[in-house]
Image 1 (cartoon, rainbow, N blue to C red):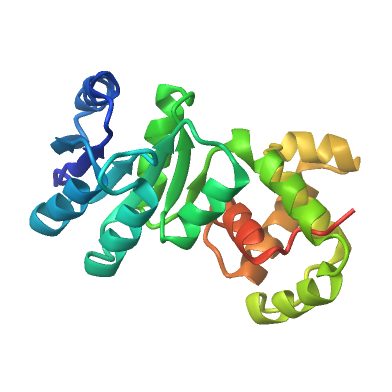
Image 2: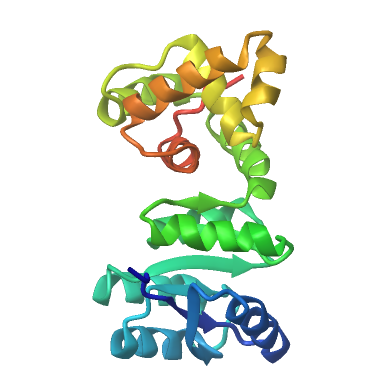
Length: 228
């Protein structure tokens, strides 16, 4: 049975970027572009009218920016997925995007395969964050909360996890947020890859998530990553 194509709305104020995205995505038989818009207000109106599966949303658009547009889309069409696709990589923008309800955050410097992976992950119900910004967000979070976060982190763990993370599981989660592969984690912690996979499975069970990306995003959003 043939799967229905994923319907994508492109919200981007720069025409050359819109054209480039359309050319890339239309080469994939699994995708169909429903429309292209140049501001956030139009993105919300088209989302409400056309119900695309996903919106590629720029942040710095006129009339209504990507953050406010994402909030409006999620309020009226919660089933529509939103990936922020932008050049903005500051921690404030990342946190604001996820707080607004975004399902993914991808930099425009990402390669084609990375963008396609982000789209597929989000449409399937996951969350996605560009690995290029994960390390930066982690460092800022640690700096901002180093004085008082230990006690609140324990409280967060109780409400977010089925059981508290062990010290090793916290280490694995931190390395995951930093973007390391299982092999790289194994080398860093001087254990086998199979041991890392076991820890990763336990982390996902305790965080009640389905995959590694969701675990990393949840760690950032709930500040579960251990502090130095």
